[in-house]
Image: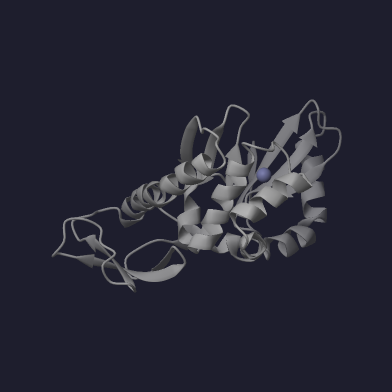
Length: 229
Ligand SMILES: [Zn+2]
């Protein structure tokens, strides 16, 4: 269920569930989606009063949300930490990175965002899979599956059945940063936790990891802001 707020110029989502016992607010700092969690027995007017009472807080939280940027011709997109201007060209038939400050797309491409998204996913696979395989060999572990996704809350994951997921948006970050995430997930093949032994292994495989971890914390939202439509 949703209602429209003219103050915030967007839908407010109401989530009523049996296992919710008090009213609470949630704002996604990537999508700016506003959700009110409510017990099932409360009326809509009670929920609305709660919303009005907390609108000052919502306004404050929205300031911290990621400002989105639509990927289109003329805009700049970071690839492996290097910002490139998006240029459409009649002379080429495939996406090209031959100029270090530009990324060229064939002008026949109708949906620039979608084409670039597919390109980034392929580029992630090309750059990251060899590193994963090489480092897995080094620690003598086998990966059962490698997948590339765009998850809102994590940069990567590793399951107990040795399946590794990497957020392809990391290909926009500097190489050292995405290498850290690859090493982090690989190290979970040895230690399924964040113990001191785990961090020691990460350090051995990627000594610069503390800087990269910090980079993700500070600039991670920068590579989440791009909208590929
Ligand atoms: Zn972890």
